[in-house]
Length: 374
Image 1: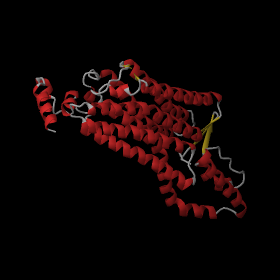
Image 2: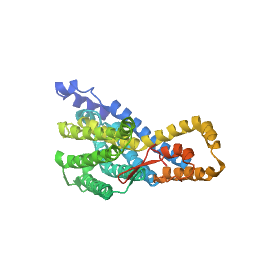
Image 3: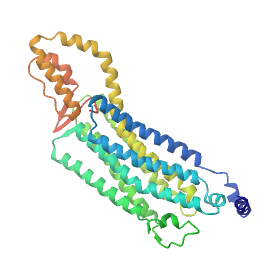
Image 4: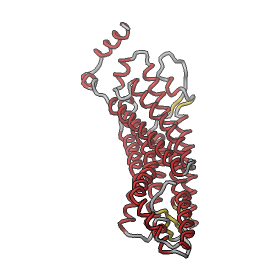
């Protein structure tokens, strides 16, 4: 212990005037606080999403499984960032080296950074697949070009995830040389790819798919014939994904503008690592927010209109009740499969209110108007 203190003191005396002035600078509190917050919100969003599904469907949907996978990988990234902060991420490099002369702290920081880079792709893949599956249920597509567009997105995302994961995983050869090069006791030899362009290309390609997934539901809604106010409201709801796009853009900007990534990595890379955590968890939150709030809104609305609905149904003739029950059953099915509701010809007056909350068809696109999650 005394040897460590002596070494740290000697190192402190050898610092330049600018380094001594920057000694107290730290990003640890910001990175730690936001990482924990994002970790909690991301997991909470998935839990609430699954809870809502079980309340209505009594079973999870396909996208729920993908969201579970996404949040597991995102949690690995979040926890790895938190651990990196514990070992000095957010401090200037000279402070990390002064605090741990053995070099083990720096080694563990780079091990955590490798984990965040490697698990970013799988988490984003799972989140985007979940979104595309949800969009497919929400927007029943009958136009061939839109089907092709959907499948092209799926293929693009899968190929991107495979490519980016392999690229980051093998940043150094052998793999563990990525962190072992900072271990003074290691005799390992290897090579590393330390170019900003190589690291930035997967981020830019990821940003492309983010924009496409954001635009897909908005452009679909724009083709519908409906009141402008309602169309604008739906577009705003689906624009929540813009938050994920903004975080992705911020990561690219930080990567290309951070001039000290190689000379002062532990401090300069802290915002980049934080944005990684934010991007993954914000994407998950965006994928769960609309269905969750839609279900909450519907539950509140149903509780207020239950008595009115009962009164309205009792006013229908006895002969129209089977058609009405059939229409409501079909509507219940459509909220889970988002298929077009075909209401019977009889008792049109009684079923008109139900049909108005069903689906809208426009040029081969069927859209569930109340944005249900079933």
